Length: 551
Ligand code: FAD
Ligand code: N01
Image (tube, rainbow, N blue to C red; front, top):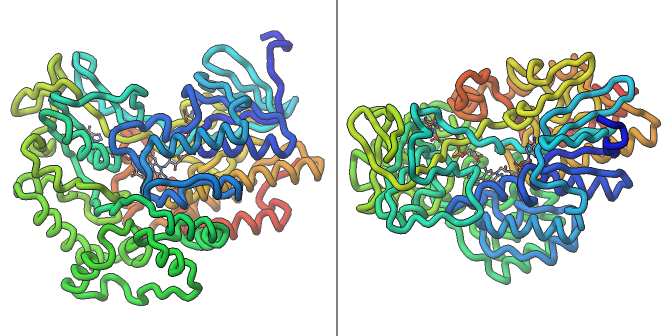
């Protein structure tokens, strides 16, 4: 390609979700020229692509939002405790417009290749429409859950009806009225969409392999006094949230009192393990205190993550709850997770999920007893019979953490291919960088705590760390940064060691790559919580980027 046709910039950012939008703004504010490239036709990332009915966040909206602008915090008002996808998308669009970020973003364009040119010390980045950019810094804000994963049943293309994946939902809403619908998959996306689809569909069949446990979200409209109390206390709320394991302060219903309580310094958490309560006490506590308040009980009782007795006690309650709520015992049996522990997978919160299975138009096929053999022109064929559908929805998850990065051909120093380096699992230092790939940063990457916490909070912390790092390099006259291999190896092992005692490292979920055939089984995140992670990142900076090679 002619040199003149290569656009030269300081930073190339891939992705325009929460991470890419903030990066673009922050780096531009620091005086850098930034080009952001986004495959979608607008900003939003997760909230642009996941438009399925029922999609909403499960971190309270007043916390699942940016904190970097005090004015933004004051001018935006969330309508619900857990806002729905359209409102979150509107919020990111508002942020992008308010901070004039879109002028730096090239939409409808996919980055397909990036090559580090050692002599020039720059990244050469190629797009699917043939554009080439040269950038000093290459930042992957490509998302941990942005590559939808389809199952590979035989003859899937033969199906002549409408076919959707929850993570790649059309912009025009899908009309389910009067239609026969199949949903495959009962993770978070299935659990959110099934109750809403069931209201419109003539007939809905849910194909279940295994279920996640889910508890009522207790979603509700936010009141003006609550919103006022939050806005008056926002900086303290954000500061305290950063001090919690998951970056989330509010674990109760959104009242003015809950704000005061959350900000009270010596708020008493139970000093007992969940396992030390009797069966009756667990039942009473869950019903009276925790149902409908979110996932606070999971952080209040860390023994849920590792103690067999606690797990057995909790599951006894949860399984009984399912049997009580779902009238048909066969359906209830299919809805009781087969995975060994509550915390094997991501806990989910829902609105009317179990109750939906009492509707006459909703049925279950347990694919463990009646496996799907293939798709055919009119629907889905199992070992028992043919099912006819107008619409099939796959809520079958994502090639998580590494999927989006591995889809780009990335070559670092000495032509090292990132995908090959990561063939046995992702290798990063702090989830931020990988040895031999200088000046290539990742936001919410593998080896960071992001997917175990309020991701917007984690994203802001990563973006600010990267932005500060680039400023430091400029001031210190350094052209490149990359982690030392030994530090990276230690960090990868540390992430594995921290997770080892926990059920989640043994369960079969996307956290360990178990949902993608052939993917190496490795625990891909840092699960020791935000405060430990922030402390480590700050220590590195304080020690002049100890563990990194700067040249
Ligand atoms: P994303 O939002 O995934 O954005 C990445 C962007 O990069 C995408 O737009 C993609 O198109 C683009 N991209 C990727 N590869 C390329 C390429 N090669 N070229 C060009 N563009 C590319 N987290 C929470 O903390 N709380 C929640 O309640 C919550 N709810 C969720 C609900 C759903 C349905 C899902 C799927 C995830 C949810 N998450 C939640 C996780 C969520 O992904 C993050 O909170 C956050 O939105 C991630 O932002 P991001 O910018 O890192 O990535
Ligand atoms: O994906 P999943 P998801 N035949 O991987 C099933 C975030 N998120 O999109 O588990 C039949 O959890 C599979 O069955 P099994 C959140 O972090 C958040 O639901 O393999 N079934 C499982 O039931 C979440 O963890 C929200 O037995 C098949 C389902 O598909 C992450 O995104 C909302 C199958 C996939 O579940 C991913 O959630 C949505 C097959 N061949 C997403 N293949 C919030 O609420 C797969 N399945 C915040």
